[in-house]
Picture 1 (spheres, one colour):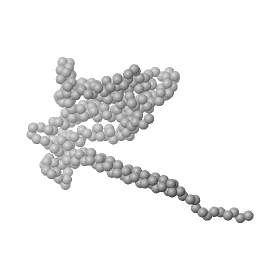
Picture 2 (cartoon, one colour):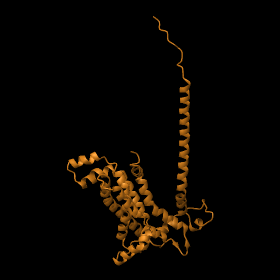
Picture 3 (tube, one colour):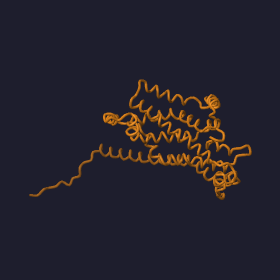
Picture 4 (cartoon, one colour):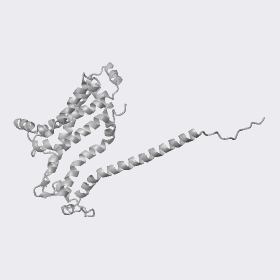
Length: 302
């Protein structure tokens, strides 16, 4: 018994052919749009990176070559600016200022985390009545211009003998960064599964144990992002450090302003100092970039 197989091709309806063509066109448009966005992102990245690259290149030039107009890209490179910055030429050493900035930034960031984590836990896991008003109150404290509180803070520091004291800066940086830290960490801790916390409570874990061993590991990317932002804000702060410190508690940004004198602008030295002082922030951001991106994206997708 023979089987007769049909060799006729299946009929493709015009609607199906049109649908395939439409999908192919949408994919092509999506691909072109993705290429365009990629090129735009690269151009924006290069645009933002050019000033940093120019500053780094100028720091390796002599003052004569750095002051030329237009600047010369083919000028000989030298390390004289770095030798002078680190005090080999008889100038002031930057190490005390760098140490003061490190102490103030790290200590204030740790204090912010210790205070912000329980506050954010109370506003997210155990929310109080009108907790959104509480968050708005925290954020509204950042709306006051910093210079508006400079005089009373200066008088307080003068009357309590806290002028030129690094621990006064730690206290100020903690109070300045605490509102934004609570605001950020509240959205991070809101993503912590409540059944996990309830299971820990059933096992007899108290609040400190829950915060350190349950909540903190889950919200670690958000905590890392908050820590990095608080560290950057503290490291870059200039106004209070300029007014409230002198020699003992001078920070790195204040030390940087000393290169702009009435004798003129020493461009190569300023670029050298700016690059060296920016390195800790750049290194911290590069080391925590994965945690930073992951933490800042928490709560964006439900």
